[in-house]
Every structure is written in C-alpha cells, then in structure tokens.
Length: 184
Image 1 (tube, rainbow, N blue to C red):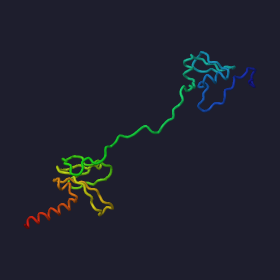
Image 2 (cartoon, one colour; image 1 turned 120 degrees about the horizontal axis):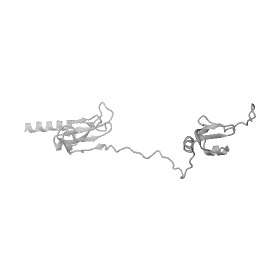
Image 3 (cartoon, helix red, strand yellow; image 1 turned 60 degrees about the vertical axis):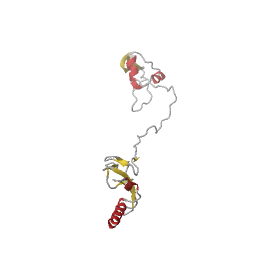
Image 4 (tube, helix red, strand yellow; image 1 turned 30 degrees about the horizontal axis):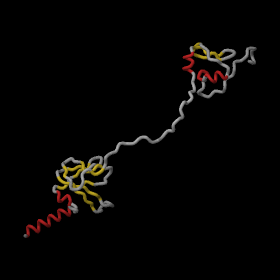
C-alpha cells in the first residue's frame, strides 16, 4: 500500500540494469510477476495494480527481447582455415639454358642471387635477361660484402656459360689463348 493514499501501489519490478527497460522484459519475466500480456497500444501503461500492454501482440512482441534456446550443440571456433596464394618463387632458367631478352631468370624475395653481366634486377628483386645468350651461375668471393655472393649472368656462348670460371677469369683465359695463337 502507498503511504499517501488508500490505493494499493503497483507491483515492484526486479532491479534493472542500464539496458533493461520494462518493455524489453521477456514474457517469462512478465509471467513470473503475474502479469499477462494483453492486446492494446504499443507501450505499457502503468495502472494502480499491474502493467498493462496497450497495443497489438505483434508490436509488443517486436519490442520485447525473446530468449531462443539452442537446438544443436555449439561447435568450437577455430583460428585456422585460411592461406595465401603460392608466389611461385625460385630459379626459372638454369645454367646453360638459352634465354631471350626479358626472360625471367629468378623470382626471389630479397637478393638470394645478384645480377651479373647482361642481367637486370626488377623492383621486386626479379632477375631478367638483357641479351640473347645462355645462363651462367657463379660465386663472387667476399670483398666489400661479408659472404660469397651467388651471381647470375647471361653469356653469348654456351661454352662460356657452362664453364666453372667467373666471367673475368674466362676473359683472362681467352686473352691468353689469343696471345698464344698470335705468337704461333
């Protein structure tokens, strides 16, 4: 009963959180309070004895939050299930193979192989042939750099490409051979 009048006070609702509104309570909570949903206007009207919905059931149902029970057991989530496309990196033309200008010799991330004579390097570190010729692989001894560098170059002759010598050693050998032939 109210302190100031003889009319009984409306039933007290359970304590509400910041997001709970009287019209958001599920039908179960209304039934627990002894309040039945009835037809009427879209808002609940507070009378002296009970909460009275005053709107059609469809509107009241849309304003109320209903709890749905699961019909299947929840499956666990996973952090896997995705992958990136393969980048197709690696050597495309091997030692002694013929190449034409613009052929890709190596696709790489960073400088695993360095460009030598008649080879240019693209912005993504891809090595391309500049002339017609044959691919040659050799290692450059450490000088200013700390490790032996693997160098790829394109030579005009196949013999030069498959020899084990570096281009400078090969040029020195050719000069010696020419000098010997001219003496004879």
